[in-house]
Length: 417
Image 1 (cartoon, rainbow, N blue to C red):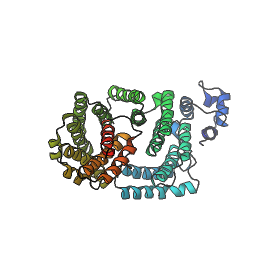
Image 2: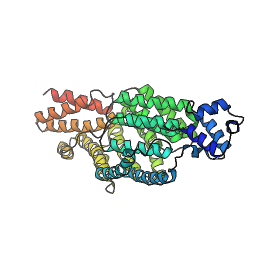
Image 3: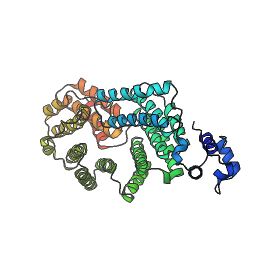
Image 4: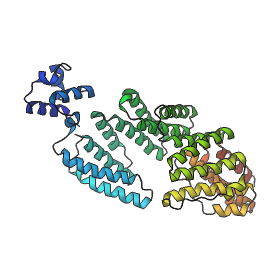
């Protein structure tokens, strides 16, 4: 844990200053003595005052003797972490994680990161994150320790970010209750330190709560955090995540078969995609358009004839996009009674294991239901029942949606045979 009090005492004595001189008119000598002896934690305002009295920047109170060397190492690792965010290929992502882990691990083993500076805490944090990415552990104790250290140095935005990340980790393991609990700790922290926390961290947390509550079938709480997010985005004029929110709202309206509102959000998504010029956003917009044509306009011919250009994306993204695009096109073929064409598209479909949110998973399960209906039309009842049981069991605990209804109807039809 950081020992700011000891550092204050050291600097005060180096400058031959008395307790009264450093305390000034903002602190009592008694309180400063408690701080120096580790019996009281100073507020950020008190730290700023003490630093001013000592003639230094407040950040110097949190730096160790080898701070410059450590800072250079930290910047090197942080640059690699920035590169990691841009990697989608599994093998490349793992290789970069291993590179970061191998750099930081010696510092951990040699006990060089004691949490005395932001850089030390952040490096420890990245060490635990790499262990998670590399599937070396499923324990969260390391992250929890970093949260407490971030609190000690008033890194409020990092505290909220890590609460959100812990929620994301639990969400990926489908532990929805644990995910929500971690994120609500972040909400409580925002309420306590609102003015010291970045808007991006708030948006991330509220967005994740929006989608997790939706996964947990709690529409009221999902709507609550959605509105909080949009309020921040609009008041602060922040475009970050705005398309993520609009995509979520689009699917909500699609499931209600409200074509007018779904089109409104599709128009907004299109406008922001043009502004941001993100290639993935542009492809996602086309994919949502397929869903709209299929489920609102029933324009199946248009779905089948639409072409996509996303071959320059990473393999992992292409594979995920293929699953959704093929699913929409197979849905269109089936409704045009083109069973052979639908089956050909779905012959080798993969399960939804990599998709953690029920909205995404249900769309993949729908493809298995379509393939089951194709088997039934071909007279292959055994394979039809196998696929529809897989799909029906997959969505049984999901909230009501068009995809779930389609699967349930297919189940009723197939199981009669």
